[in-house]
Image 1 (cartoon, one colour):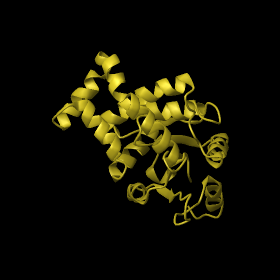
Image 2 (cartoon, rainbow, N blue to C red):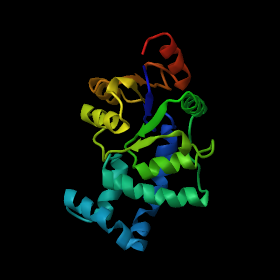
Image 3 (cartoon, rainbow, N blue to C red):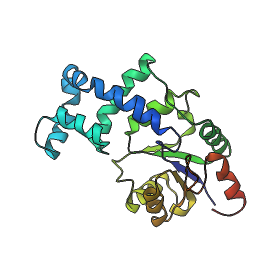
Length: 218
């Protein structure tokens, strides 16, 4: 029996365009000035970047944004910059209506909901806390980022199940990325690929997840 649903964000609960065309440019345009204005706050992040690559850490971070690098220090700094944007009302977090409905439905049914994203936990809570559908944070019982481990490695999903206090087979993972779905399944989780574009995945939206569960296909 499924007792928890773990979901990805980008391409799964939320539009890739929102991340690529709103969040990333907002952080890129402000990154250098933010670092200069918050030297003490960002010092540990810049030190971690410098330990990974030689050269100016700010320039490295800007390049990582352009490369869409899934680097933990970059995600932490982006989350800090996005906090200002959400607080000022510059944007609200995009969540697909079917994802909002599904999350609320599953929460009401007593399922534990959690997030696993390459974006930092801070960025996750900002997106769901300032979403177009209102504050969705009360729906979730856990947030996980790359500090838990890479999203394409089975050990990360095993660690999440253990943190949730559940056997892996009691957790259903939703993602748009085939490699992440494969890693979750390798860890023993049930997993579905959500494909909102060409229908090549297991389900086109969150609406169909319940139907598969009712038919015993999960």
